[in-house]
Length: 124
Image (cartoon, rainbow, N blue to C red; front, side, top):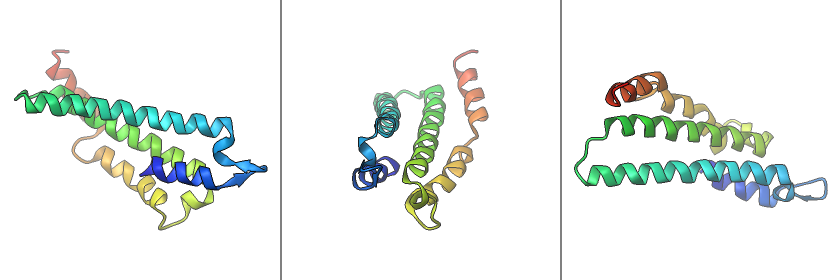
């Protein structure tokens, strides 16, 4: 959601006589978002495959939770930044997601708890 909303906005919004998406720094931010999303998707696909095979990859589940929520946090932050005032307006999707991401990071086990769980499972 954050990525798609931001991509659409940067294609429509004009600054300094051109689309926001035509600025190199904006394109790079969008690529950074997309890269993290794809990496997280690949990690989750691998995890789903392991679960389908009957494995109980506890460490990988903990790592995937951390990766997914950090990706969410990164994308929500970039969305608010690139959407500017529109991203910070109370009630907008980007603003809501930006507020909610912290709850998602803590719910189900804070990052430090997940790291400790993963470390124990990996024998560290």
